[in-house]
Length: 108
Image (cartoon, rainbow, N blue to C red; front, side):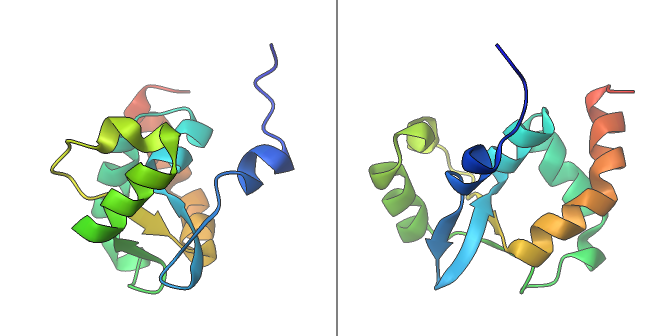
């Protein structure tokens, strides 16, 4: 089985929330090969690089709708943590903190 990430893999993870094309932190962490917690810690350490138009936290209603409509998010159903959604600019900014994500996750 290949670990190659295809355009179709990425496109399948793009959602529309608040009339914006976004990717959820959990999906991005999976693509980066790390845990969601590690990705979010790296973002929080560099929060000045992520203004509101780059990322936002989902509210409870948005999270509930996401869990209802996307089977892959079912494990988030009982979580009290609201997921983050990253716009295209936010995903691009993640590439600038990705070395931090890899180092934190123990990758070399």
